Image (cartoon, rainbow, N blue to C red):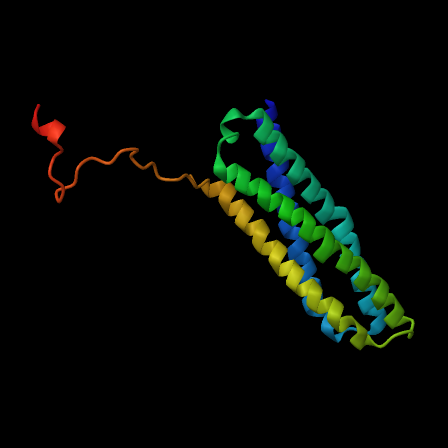
Length: 179
C-alpha cells in the first residue's frame, strides 16, 4: 500500500473520530439537565475523557495526515480546496483546544465542586453557554471541511482576457482599417 492511501485512510478514520466525539459530547450535554449533582459530575468527567482520548488525538491525526498528504501529493500543492481544508484544520485546532477541550476540563472541575456542595449549579451556566456555542462552531467547521474534501471545488478565479477585443460600439482603429 502506498503512502498516499495510508494517509487517506488515517485521515478519513480520524475525521470520523472528530465528528463522533463532537456528536457524543452534544448528546451527553443534552441529557445532562435532569441528573443529580454527582451523576452530572460523572457525566462531565466522561465528556472530559472523550475529549482527551478521542477528539484531540483524532484532530491531531487529521491535521498531520492532511498536511503530509499535501506535501507528498503534488496536485494538492496548487489546489485551493486543499489549502482551504488546511485553514479549516488550523481553525479547528484552535477552536477545539479553546472552546471544547478547555471548556470540558473547566466544566468537569466545576461540576465536581457542585457535587461537593462548594458552589451552586447555576455557576455552570456561563461555561455551558460557551461550550454549546464552541461545539456547534467546531462541528460546523468539521462538516464543512469534510464537504470540501469530498466535493473538491475548484475555487479558481475565472481567467480574464488580457486585452479585450473591439466591441460593437467601438469602430475599428485606424491601423486596423489600413490592413
